[in-house]
Length: 285
Image 1: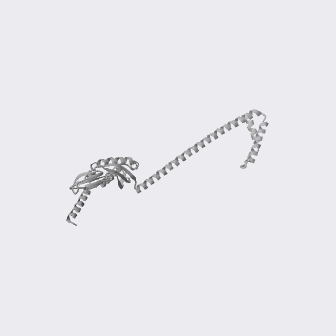
Image 2: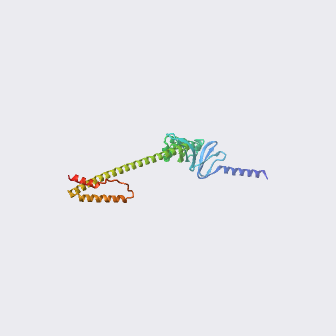
Image 3: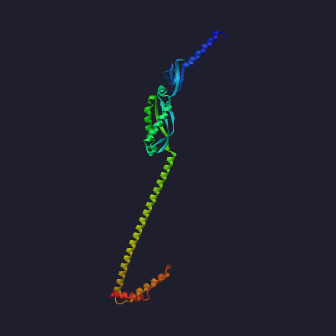
């Protein structure tokens, strides 16, 4: 093969290589940072781009789509000295690739540590109950504080989500014991209150029964007194009807007593009729 032919093939190969080196296809969602002789020169946008071969060099390929950063689980202490565990996820977007590459050595590492530090600080100013029930508040504060710090890095924090926030195992056990004690206390109070109300109702019932019994005794006594007076007025000097009436009631009472299954021995004076007659005569006198 002649030397000239070899030279032509080599020259064509160099031309092809040079063209390939100078043409850059940047995919959508990415931007390339180009350095010229070791210094930042330009940023290539998505699509077809031409650079100077051998002088310009693509130093960094940066993704400009929203990027999630997982924030590892960490320990935080609340203002009332409760230990809790929390982790989060941050969604960031690179707005200026050259700032992200030259403004800080590793922007992902920096943002992770920034989120962790601010998250501990925010929770440290809250009580345990507030920290467990204020995810939206924590998220808003976290985003505000981080956004101001990452502006110089050509980044924007679009959202920070709290994935999990819960007490430590020891604190969780203590909270469960506290909740159990509170439930037992509430149950004891309810039982005591119920017993109190029951005692009051029983006492009121006994008092009402006693009052009604007393009223009944008074009514019966008045009725008996009136009946005796009426009988005394009716018989006058003739005590035979009264003796007959009392005797009849005496016999009826003895009959009912004998028929009762709970009947017990009852001793009555043998001269009860004479005693009744004496009472009637005494009343007339």
